Image (cartoon, rainbow, N blue to C red; front, top):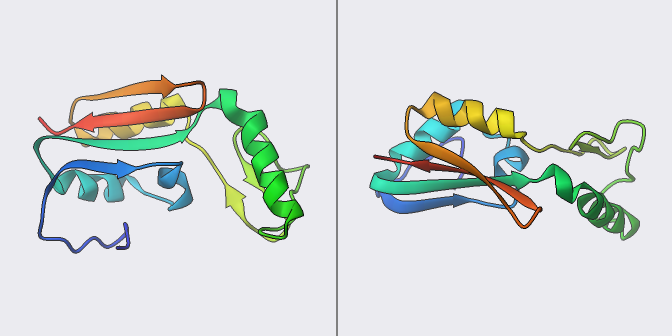
Length: 128
């Protein structure tokens, strides 16, 4: 289903948006509000992005993909600060803890931000 036009009549206890989906799908605050509408009361939404501590591993993974022709050559001049830019126009971003904080506050629900294994940053929003 398209996160930008969710047409479900069901609700869920847990919604997961993993492996930097919040950035790779270009999710907006409105998309997050729509996801929160899919949660049952007492449910939780999990959104993840990459930790800044994971930068070297992440860049290496993108360079490997580029070497195999799976995406364009890395634009090293414009790559940095959590953003990977390829010469074919592909752009991979991340969210900072501050951006996650802003998104969490925007929902009006309780939330927390947690880092896992120096690789992922999670925004967990609870519908209470």
